[in-house]
Amino acid sequence: MREPNRGVIVVGGGAAGMLAALTAARNGAEVTLLERNQKVGRKLYITGKGRCNLTNDCTVAEFLTNVPRNDRFLTSAVTRFPPSAVQSFFTDLGVPLKTERGNRVFPQSDKAADVVDALFLALRRSRVALVQDRAEHILTREGAVTGVQGEHGSYAASQVILATGGVSYPLTGSTGDGYAMAAELGHTILPPKPSLVPLVTEGEECPRMQGLSLRNVVLKVKNRKGKVLFREQGELLFTHFGLSGPLVLSASAHMRDFERDHYIAVIDLKPALDEATLDARLVRELSSQPNRAFHNVLETLEPRLLVPVLAERAAIPPDTPANAVTRPQRRRLLELLKGLDFSIAGPRPVQDAIVTSGGVKVSEVDPHTMGSKLVKGLYLAGELLDVDAYTGGFNLQIAWSTGRAAGEAAALAVSCGGER
Image (cartoon, rainbow, N blue to C red; front, side):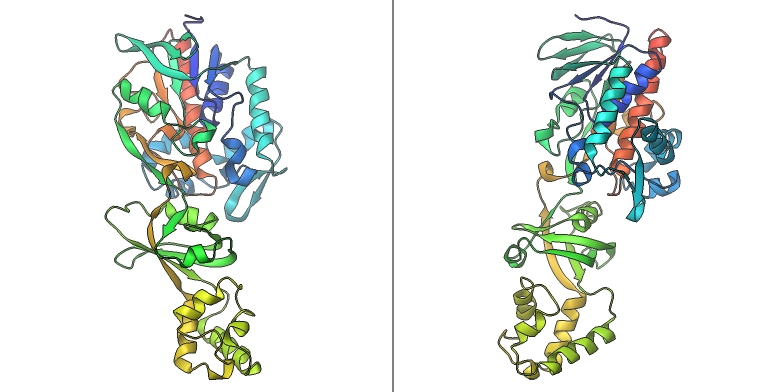
């Protein structure tokens, strides 16, 4: 078994793992980072459409309101390493930042690679040993960690930080290995579910509009009782299975119980116009082109792919002359423009999700250190835990804060001779 047996091993080279490894090394520990891929940070490269929305410029209190599950568990870690500290951390690493709509923080270059490269360089400067290997088991003796068994060798350590991610985007290496290793040691794993995920709609209307992107629309989501669970303006996309895009991914995080509830997505196609103003515009468009076919007039208001769906829903034959559209038909069209609804059949598979809901039960983890309450010397960080947040940089903030807490605690335990 490889030395040092008093050191720290971090399993997983994603956001939480890299931050944990760097923190432990900067606090004096000898650190080995095990990553199954050739390069660290593979999932980071694709976050924020390749731009890496690395945090949100908000207070701790505001951050916690964007965590729908187990927010209290994160209070300590995020308070000690809040969004402001994350921004300073990356600025100090040489990554200039900028803040955009919704207080989303990005690198000024709009390149996720700059974030990964800065972390990689910092790891090398801190003498973290990067080893390409896939961890298979956490080794223990008498209830305490002794190391990690990988595909290609065994690695001794008194402290192990497990930060392997969830099961979203498996091609990046997030295949649920951490769940298996944690469960093997007695931890309860709440079944992983997709969060921040595209949605499958009922019927064939969305597939007919595949590829159509709508900007500056308002999306509302209602549950079975008609309660509005989500409302936000932005961009969405029609796909071969239903709905996707930033608005839809954000909305999906509010749809927590597909087994027992039913959800309706409602799109306001003209949010800048109230009903009276929009109705006046419809009258003006129809009367100014009285002999044109209805569908041609409607194409001056909405994208061509959307027109057949609107015409069918409004029960207006596409070739109807504009001056023949009745007041009830116009009223129905107005209602559709302000509230085009789609019944949601369910989410796409968890592999298509940006993040995973579910994971290691947080009551079995110390919220101050991320240390396991079941196994001495084991820490759990990032998406592996049963915590997730809405879009806007909040999920990466969870990774940075929990990784930081685990790294500090593991390094302290090493310096204290394994006690924590």
